[in-house]
Figure (spheres, rainbow, N blue to C red):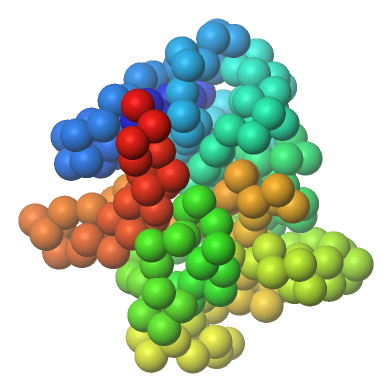
Length: 232
């Protein structure tokens, strides 16, 4: 399977994603510079974490106008898988590929710690190998992870089962104290209506190896791989 990782000026998790895909999973991975329109024939596109364009104007706002993003939008419209992590999630909302916005954390501080996630939808290419009853532990590292949308959009997300991940406690309880940034309904990740575009604030690519003390991220990537087993 082939992954393409879009690199913006200020991306800093691009090599984390590459390492996880190429060195840990043994799959093909390529970097795509933001100024290029050729996505290099991917099966899945990853928009990595970081501070694209220094987070000037708004997080992800300037990156949304990159030439590569026009190709990503066309790729997604044709049914291709797109995973936006942290800043990548912000870029997806700025392009309109996902609804809502990521606001400043409730604390107005940068947060860097492990959080627990409850998987709400396991019928997606990104989550089909996950278990709703087993909380995941992923690191977060963001200052603007506070998910917000208008009431109509929030109702649509909830009724259409498009909230994919929520912040929870270690036992899977959806509590206010488990919410690190003030996100509406503890939302940590959402998908589009087609289910082929996922944005999430926590970092599965940083939880892939026993040497770092956490392999919970494997389930996300194993889910993606399962869509293509035997296809190549």
